Image 1: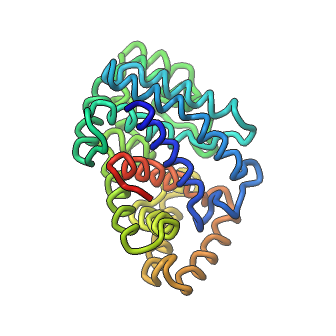
Image 2: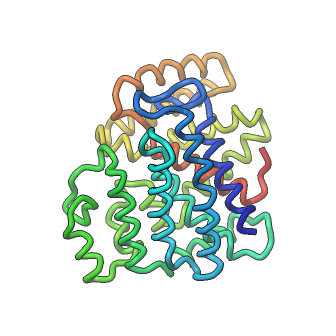
Length: 299
């Protein structure tokens, strides 16, 4: 069971980075100046043992200790390749899914049971898990995270505050639900990932898998303004990008030539600034794919 879960989670990362076209992001034909497609591939495969350990932690400890697994995962991601942060958000989103999946006795799972088990895993995590999660984020020090007044990962007092008040991940992340997709999903029990999984499954019945993945990315981007863009460029910019994604979908998205032409135009505009990289949507796509695979979807 543990190996099955880990393989689905790694497959999700590989499918996410392979999703093409993916405006503003790394895909099969586009790299960032500092991070290449190959960096994502190497890091994805290196995370197999991390997702397996997350599954074991779910079965044996009902999620307690998952924060340490996440910290080890970020360390592994950074040490196995030179492209920097490839998967921080995906590790934070998918590790609880791997942990929750191990609570089921049979496979594949259904979406309701995954969500039910996620509640068990996340609610069981303690302040030590919070410390490790925040330290994992600090390792990466994501651009655009910014200085914030409450629980800043770059402020040493944050870790004293977490220890003193024994803040669980839920308590620590709750103030950030409007600012960060990971916080939203953890606190709200993954409604966006569940939507993404259902959307991907639906799309794959109507079009080839590569089109279904790209179309699902556009649907997620249009429905949920990207929190990475929001932090870096402001709420108005994030909402404008979502509106543009909606217009592309109205043209047919990846299924029509007009839609593809509009995607290429949007991609060209978004690549002009790192503020317009929709990384949160990519993380959400990865967790959506993982959820779909664990629920029995076959590409």
